Length: 254
Image 1 (cartoon, rainbow, N blue to C red):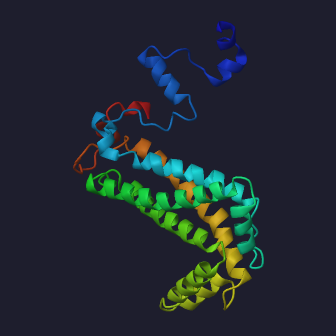
Image 2 (image 1 turned 30 degrees about the vertical axis):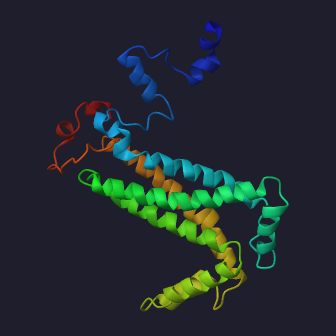
Image 3 (image 1 turned 90 degrees about the vertical axis):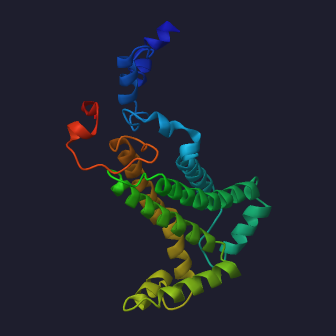
């Protein structure tokens, strides 16, 4: 075993030995791609299960499930008005584990909407949106909107009667916006009526545009959690702005 841990391959991945000292523990965190996003210090109260309920982690896990199952579904789905509904039926009835994976994707999407909403409620009621976390709260609101948009665009892809009338109603609502409503409606539909162009546009938003925006902002969201000193203390009050040396104890590690 010692010959393995002293090998160049092992040392290229694990640059420290066993973290049995505070210095080595710090190096393990700062030199790891996956661990360095954690804040240098966290408040002990914020580690209690009944403070966060793990809602942020649950939402991230559900997003991972959605990405994996969504990529799998892309192999068997064609964004075509002639084939979309038949492809969904084929996934449900003929593809091995198709019904399982499609339902896993569908229920993970529903649950993610719920957990992201509850996560925002938890952040609000515990005062975690206060200084210096206002920016991260705003990013979280945008992530909530993107989650709703992903859920809605995915709802339309089976191209059944529910999907057709959902597109019709939603685009008609968009058309009521003063001055730009009709332009927005035409952009969403790719024309003047619900058809192939609309399905392709909603499909592109669901598998590319919205996920890229969501993952990018999620990365910024995690980064801000680290830079803001981790989770807030329960019932933490907003404090006046101070210099970096005063606001973050031990901030030199940042």
